[in-house]
Amino acid sequence: MFDAAGLEILDRAECVALLTTVPLGRIVFTDLALPAVLPVNFSVWDGSLLIRTGADGKLAAATRNAVVAFEVDDIDLDTGKGWSVVVVGRSGVVDHPAELAEAARAAPRTWVGGRDHLIRIVIGTISGRRVAQLPSF
Image (cartoon, rainbow, N blue to C red; front, top):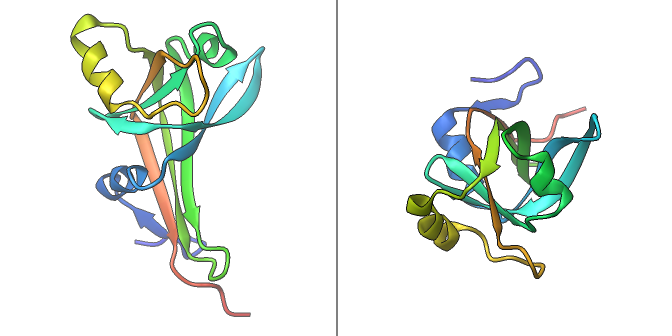
C-alpha cells in the first residue's frame, strides 16, 4: 500500500522490526507546556521502547506517566531511499521488581554517565513509511 505522496505504508510488524535496526531515535515530550525533542539511544523490549536517563533529569520528570512520541529513521543521503517510523505511547518508569532486572539487561548501554533510570514507552500506535525511489522530475 502507498500513501497519496507515493510512500510505501509499513505495517506494524515491519515498523517494530525496523526499530531494532538502529540505536538512536528522538523522543518528543512536553516540557513547560512546550514541545521538546531529544535524541536518545534506545532498545526494544517486550512491546516497549527502553531509554536510560538520569533519575533527576528533565527527561525523567517529563515522561512520568505521559503520552510521548518517538521517531526513528534511516535514510541513504546519496539515493534518497530510506524509512521512518513513529511511535506514540504512554511512558513511565520501569520500577517493578519483577521487571527491573530483565529490563536493565535489555536496555541500551548508556553513552553518558549517571544514567541508571529506565523509561519505558509502551508502543501504542505505530506507523511507518518507506521511500523506495527518488522522484523523477
